[in-house]
Length: 132
Image (cartoon, rainbow, N blue to C red; front, side, top):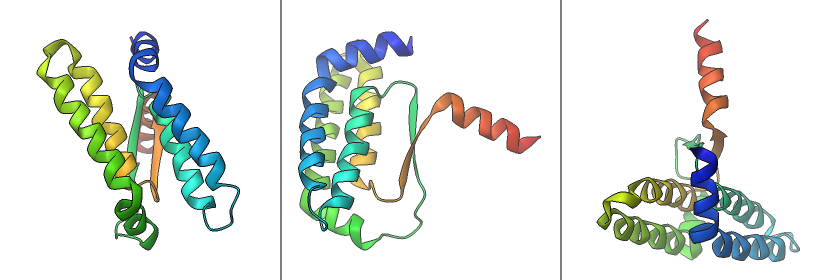
């Protein structure tokens, strides 16, 4: 189901935003100051391409200066656009799984510094191994 969801997502919702964020990340990585923001753009683009089967986790406990700058400059706009898209997709009951992916991307786009993206299978295995 993850593969089918990822293929449909990539064709309908992921291809253009992923390409835009990848190009912007490449441009930002050309400067010393923009390198961290470029890496954040790559992280978002990677999740935008194929979000099914992945989960995001915020590792930082306190707000950091890069996250505050990110939200005030671009992160707020990106996350707000994905939340609006999630509301539109929830209006049609059949597209609720896609709306959940939009919320996942919005969460990462809001605070990318200190957040990690995991494959759900790997996260389950690590939790299983830590319980042993």
